[in-house]
Image 1 (cartoon, rainbow, N blue to C red):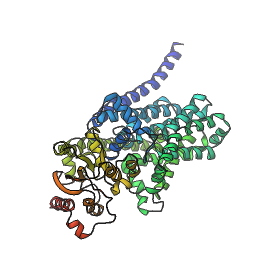
Image 2 (cartoon, one colour):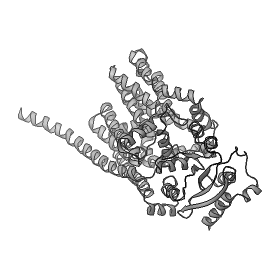
Image 3 (cartoon, one colour):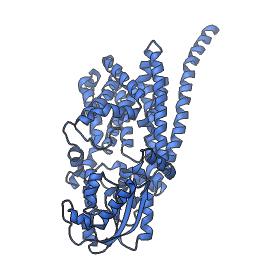
Image 4 (cartoon, rainbow, N blue to C red):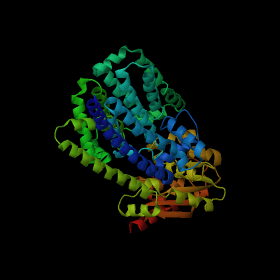
Length: 544
């Protein structure tokens, strides 16, 4: 009996010790990574979209022309607790980003076993797309967390019919709808599972499915109300304005983009895991859930990318598809009889650590002026994170009670953030406002040119012009028309950073009484415009 007890104790120890080691590795990496991300969140200046989300948080509404309301509400709640500033804006997203690997741990534990749970959580920390999540106050943070919660709930409801799991599924999908229009993707992937997988088809006969869908529909209420108020501006931007809906061959490079975003070896391992999981989908739990969720996200986003937006950054779109594969990857590697799969995974982990280290180092350098200059010298200039503080510092000594105006929505939002929104900052009707879907929102707030003239026609204005905000061709056309939008401009201050890579100039003048003429400026008009001439002179100086 003693011998039998000793053998049982040895077996239990042989299982518990590796689990404890993996848990310790996960907790160590988690703590170090969270400390680094917290420092970055408290240091980095807001970047373009982030600043506009903050501006939206100052105007509570059911939704906005670019997004549903949750991102703005999180920012507003964060500042209500921690005060105005980058950490006040970002701390809710920092915590949500820290929750994601724990959800992956839970998913892998329930799908397989505790050791796989900690291994999957560790891989989540090392995957650059997931490991850096939470540094910035962007909608992808709550969206990814909501989708992964929905995947966990789906795993549970296919195994046992419990009310709390159905409510979790519906609540997670409702949060996704309240965060971004891309919540349509998990709904579509779930529909594919419910139509094509045997265990998925069985869900149609369960009342819990309809309860979950009813709860998820609550997340559509803010979208419906905001689009009603804005005459469909949000839907129009997401479904029409930003997407050409025609095939563009350049999108065939998406796998290369994903390989860089995930690091090449880990990306290859995840694709291998996806292929193996898809072949085992008919074996039932948990392979069918992982197969349809992961391959559904990856395949559908690839197909969508061939016809949709090819201008804006989109490498983060497929992230929810990789997360369930992180749970399957250790199991599939362990099932291989040879050592080659384990060596490949070890190499992939090593490269992922390097990749994420480079990403965090880039953000850290972007947060430090001296280091940002070195990035500029290396052709890796962090344009979206630098220069805003210096531009805002020009305002106070130059301002003498004038109306504050910026030449595009991003500069207006950044200046409003650094000035703590003590007075409104208007935006000229830049093409950038339309390109990024912010023009309808500015019009609704009366912070566009029409609102500026309606409230301040003939009054003194201080105009901040971001001369480097657009590509060379677009910049040439836009800056040539700015003299139509300010009467009697005279330059009062200028900041040129990093060898002219970012330039902002301040002009004093008067708000025009009439709507400016449309169309490009003629050569004669550009030649008579001091704003255009000064920007060209600065560009020529930077090029030398």
